[in-house]
Image 1 (cartoon, one colour):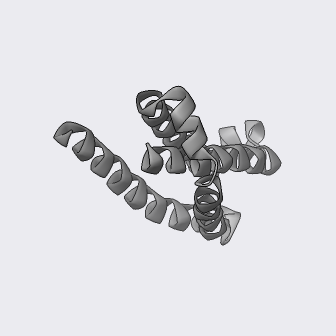
Image 2 (cartoon, rainbow, N blue to C red):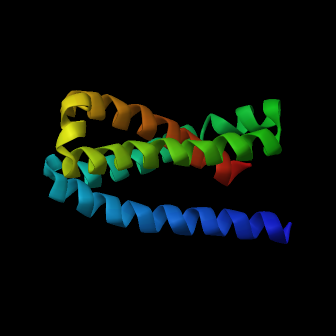
Length: 122
Protein backbone atom coordinates (compact mmCIF):
# COMPACT_ATOMS: atom_id res chain seq x y z
CA UNK A 1 0.00 0.00 0.00
CA UNK A 2 2.86 2.37 0.76
CA UNK A 3 4.46 1.62 -2.60
CA UNK A 4 1.20 2.34 -4.45
CA UNK A 5 0.70 5.56 -2.51
CA UNK A 6 4.23 6.68 -3.27
CA UNK A 7 3.78 5.99 -7.00
CA UNK A 8 0.49 7.89 -6.95
CA UNK A 9 2.18 10.86 -5.26
CA UNK A 10 5.11 10.90 -7.70
CA UNK A 11 2.79 10.72 -10.71
CA UNK A 12 0.67 13.67 -9.60
CA UNK A 13 3.70 15.67 -8.53
CA UNK A 14 5.39 15.20 -11.89
CA UNK A 15 2.14 15.94 -13.73
CA UNK A 16 1.65 19.20 -11.83
CA UNK A 17 5.23 20.28 -12.54
CA UNK A 18 4.93 19.38 -16.22
CA UNK A 19 1.60 21.22 -16.50
CA UNK A 20 3.20 24.40 -15.18
CA UNK A 21 6.03 24.19 -17.69
CA UNK A 22 3.70 23.24 -20.54
CA UNK A 23 1.44 26.27 -20.16
CA UNK A 24 4.45 28.56 -20.43
CA UNK A 25 5.88 26.58 -23.36
CA UNK A 26 2.58 26.71 -25.23
CA UNK A 27 2.36 30.46 -24.74
CA UNK A 28 5.90 30.86 -26.08
CA UNK A 29 5.13 28.49 -28.97
CA UNK A 30 2.41 30.71 -30.36
CA UNK A 31 -0.60 29.00 -28.78
CA UNK A 32 -1.47 31.93 -26.52
CA UNK A 33 -3.34 31.00 -23.36
CA UNK A 34 -4.51 27.61 -24.66
CA UNK A 35 -2.38 25.84 -22.06
CA UNK A 36 -4.33 27.47 -19.25
CA UNK A 37 -7.66 26.70 -20.90
CA UNK A 38 -6.63 23.09 -21.49
CA UNK A 39 -5.67 22.65 -17.83
CA UNK A 40 -8.99 24.12 -16.76
CA UNK A 41 -10.79 21.74 -19.12
CA UNK A 42 -8.90 18.76 -17.67
CA UNK A 43 -10.09 19.63 -14.17
CA UNK A 44 -13.66 20.25 -15.31
CA UNK A 45 -13.71 16.87 -17.03
CA UNK A 46 -12.11 15.33 -13.96
CA UNK A 47 -14.95 16.66 -11.81
CA UNK A 48 -17.71 15.66 -14.22
CA UNK A 49 -16.39 12.19 -14.90
CA UNK A 50 -16.08 11.51 -11.17
CA UNK A 51 -19.79 10.77 -11.23
CA UNK A 52 -19.46 7.89 -13.71
CA UNK A 53 -16.06 6.39 -12.92
CA UNK A 54 -17.18 4.54 -9.76
CA UNK A 55 -19.22 2.23 -11.99
CA UNK A 56 -16.17 1.67 -14.20
CA UNK A 57 -14.00 0.85 -11.18
CA UNK A 58 -16.63 -1.57 -9.82
CA UNK A 59 -16.88 -3.34 -13.16
CA UNK A 60 -13.18 -3.56 -14.08
CA UNK A 61 -11.53 -3.41 -10.67
CA UNK A 62 -9.13 -0.95 -9.09
CA UNK A 63 -5.95 -2.44 -10.58
CA UNK A 64 -7.00 -2.01 -14.20
CA UNK A 65 -8.50 1.40 -13.38
CA UNK A 66 -5.19 2.60 -11.94
CA UNK A 67 -3.25 1.35 -14.96
CA UNK A 68 -5.64 2.94 -17.46
CA UNK A 69 -5.78 6.17 -15.48
CA UNK A 70 -1.99 6.36 -15.40
CA UNK A 71 -1.68 5.77 -19.14
CA UNK A 72 -3.92 8.75 -19.88
CA UNK A 73 -1.34 11.08 -18.35
CA UNK A 74 1.10 9.99 -21.04
CA UNK A 75 -1.37 10.97 -23.78
CA UNK A 76 -1.70 14.56 -22.67
CA UNK A 77 2.05 14.95 -22.09
CA UNK A 78 2.69 13.55 -25.57
CA UNK A 79 0.31 16.12 -27.05
CA UNK A 80 2.02 18.96 -25.23
CA UNK A 81 5.45 17.63 -26.28
CA UNK A 82 4.39 17.64 -29.93
CA UNK A 83 3.44 21.30 -29.64
CA UNK A 84 6.85 22.17 -28.25
CA UNK A 85 8.57 20.09 -30.90
CA UNK A 86 6.60 21.87 -33.62
CA UNK A 87 7.49 25.27 -32.21
CA UNK A 88 11.22 24.65 -32.12
CA UNK A 89 11.73 22.74 -35.37
CA UNK A 90 10.99 24.02 -38.84
CA UNK A 91 10.93 20.46 -40.17
CA UNK A 92 8.07 19.41 -37.90
CA UNK A 93 5.98 22.48 -38.73
CA UNK A 94 5.42 20.93 -42.14
CA UNK A 95 4.12 17.68 -40.70
CA UNK A 96 2.29 18.79 -37.55
CA UNK A 97 -0.31 21.43 -38.35
CA UNK A 98 -1.96 23.71 -35.81
CA UNK A 99 -5.37 22.06 -36.33
CA UNK A 100 -3.91 18.57 -35.98
CA UNK A 101 -2.38 19.61 -32.67
CA UNK A 102 -5.71 20.95 -31.46
CA UNK A 103 -7.36 17.60 -32.22
CA UNK A 104 -4.56 15.75 -30.44
CA UNK A 105 -4.88 18.13 -27.48
CA UNK A 106 -8.61 17.60 -27.20
CA UNK A 107 -8.31 13.80 -27.35
CA UNK A 108 -5.52 13.86 -24.77
CA UNK A 109 -7.44 16.19 -22.48
CA UNK A 110 -10.61 14.11 -22.67
CA UNK A 111 -8.63 10.98 -21.86
CA UNK A 112 -6.72 12.67 -19.05
CA UNK A 113 -9.82 14.15 -17.43
CA UNK A 114 -11.43 10.72 -17.32
CA UNK A 115 -8.17 9.03 -16.32
CA UNK A 116 -7.60 11.44 -13.43
CA UNK A 117 -10.94 10.55 -11.96
CA UNK A 118 -10.15 6.85 -12.41
CA UNK A 119 -6.98 7.28 -10.38
CA UNK A 120 -8.63 9.22 -7.59
CA UNK A 121 -11.61 6.90 -7.28
CA UNK A 122 -9.71 3.63 -7.62
